[in-house]
Length: 282
Image (cartoon, rainbow, N blue to C red; front, top):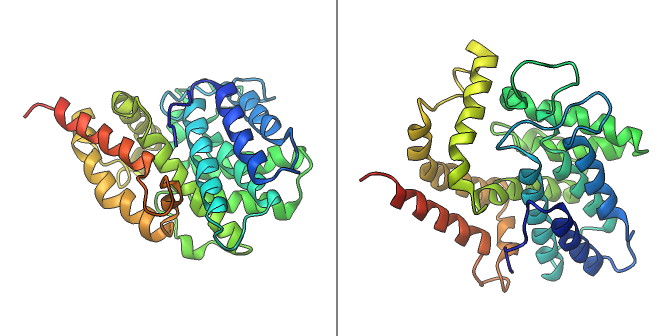
């Protein structure tokens, strides 16, 4: 698996996701991927009625595309491995919509002139589920379909009780776990992840200022340097256990070749952490 697709290029991501989708579903909707990514691009570039363009600098449109590409690759790997239950075309499509909209909660309404969308960090999951429902209902999706997308998006919550989510079935649960997996791996494997950590800190800090006392138990970094010091621990002690246990090890479907080959996303993350370690003063 080659991770060199430019996730800053919406056309390149669309082309690769479409290739994976059409390989999995040769008789599928040839325009679905372009259409779904196009809807999201409209929202994130300020062309959706009532909303501004995304102005959060870490959770930007490229962040969404990084997760989207990772999820498509994971589901493709799972499909190729013949894992059960099989993910149907319709479920794949709902899963793609879910990850495309999972950070729509960072979008500010048109009349909101205070700060950036980063202020919604601690409440963005709830806002994303609301935005996703409104958008998809307007596109003609049914209540069961929008319910499913909302539950998938909830899987990205830091403190969500996954066992309490009322998934409609195993396919929906797997797609939610795939979304959560791809959200974490896509961002941490990005070539500029380390360089953007100060930007992530500023998003957390803005959210803490916006939320005030309500954020004290959530915002746990005293400075940019504190966040940098805690990043490797975040990977070792939070992300890896969550990937392996909460999300049922779905990341292994990114192993190339499956099941025992290297995982390019994990390898890239380890390289990023090594870069971080080497760049910090001893």
